[in-house]
Length: 61
Image (cartoon, rainbow, N blue to C red; front, side):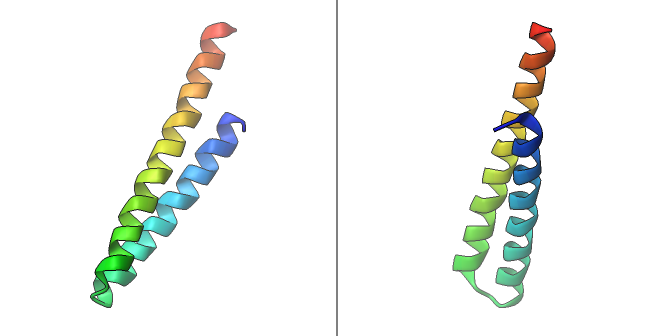
């Protein structure tokens, strides 16, 4: 997977995680809120991987 792909998927997961957290909070659903937190963290990690790939690519050029 390329760095751009990682970053895009990361942003998408982060956004969906935020939505899940909001819906979970609005409906008082702790399980959905927890799933949102996990998905948001996954998205943040994916974005970090993409940024690291970019940095490595720049360093090797």
